Length: 428
Image (cartoon, rainbow, N blue to C red):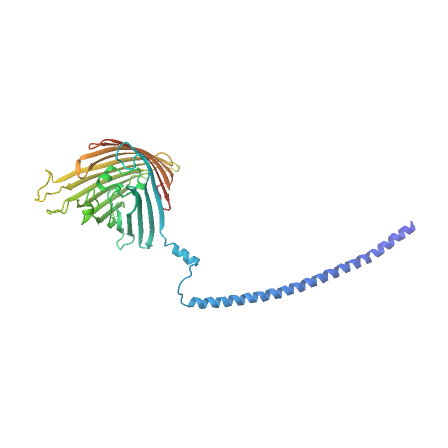
């Protein structure tokens, strides 16, 4: 026992000496490593400071170089300049393509594309601001005629947006004349597949579009209502009511449009039109033979304010009267008992939207012919439109036509209109 106790006491007395020696050795090692790290850090610091000084010197040199180049006259801008390229890119016009594809079935013999599919028309549209004061629009139509495809200018005009007189705008170029409502619409803008007989009988297959000038003025009034007066002068080249290819003078057109709010959900648009010029039997030895057209259009629209309720109603009507001078013989006598042909035409259209993408419509047509008021026809149309989106719609239409100069006919259309670009095929 005494030996064991003595051994234990000796171990306890020598342990602090062993621990102190070990700790002294560790501290010395740590201090050596710290000294080495400080040396490496100082070396890296010197290297980084030298690198930074080199970069600063290079930046100063580059700044001086580009300052000198900027002061020198530039011969041409580099093609790859990104910011300048994007700036000039904004001058490119908006380009759109709209296709009008139909199937036309009919029991009327002699009709072109009878019971066939047809790419009836393709419209190419280009629109852009010319400068802060003017805008340019071009519409080309590609159509098939006699087995060949032809492209023609439907409309192309410049609109002066800012004139010295407040509320006054002007237009120059080729455009659809501002007579009534339906005549101004392109095929893809129609709420039906075809134009009413009133338009085709008195203005031609797709309405009256001629080169000329136009001015429109918003008339100030104490009621603070929209009242627009439009005056136009165009070439006399329309062959249905006026002189056609033989026309060497002008046609004068006037239109006034009134727009009223009945309440927050209903509006009324009331318009009146007039057009006058020599007809294709004019320019004779005994003076010009004139044609004068007068028109009235009335449109009622209703759309509820309730959110999520996809309902709307549109009731559109037009009435046209024509007075057409008859030709004279070489001796100055009239070839008939009457020196004037009085005729008229009209249509009424009712559209009802019953769902977000679905609209149904009905239309009644009546029209005499401007050159022979004894010939007339009237027609009844029913249809259904599915607006797939604002860029594409499908339409089905049936039409029955009664004629007093030919056999009656039945027609059915299946139409698909689709647009590429910002010029939409349908007002969604």
